[in-house]
Image (cartoon, rainbow, N blue to C red):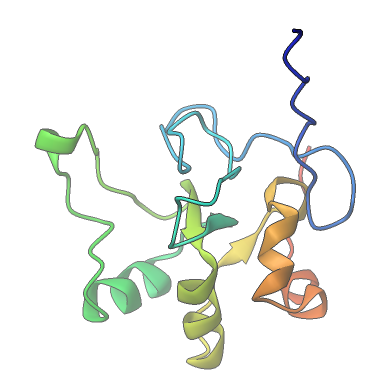
Length: 128
């Protein structure tokens, strides 16, 4: 029996999901893409561009993304780095006026189960 071909994941715009980051191992699969599966209860599907403001907010909320953790091969994030963020964390940051910008082409479509497309569009950055 031939195994079915996995469909390419789509982004929130309904087109092919683009990589979020090429230099950091981000995403549920740590492959640079914000694609996910059912075992990712945090839904790491929002491709964000880090800001100092958001990193400070996240640290205060108990998720320190700026401190390197070599034991997990995590270099720590700085302003300008791209990272696949949990959808609910992005919503929390939005409500606190701390949301980082997003790359719409790199946010997996399942983000729309939690977030509003108009909110994401309001924080969109141009991608090349």
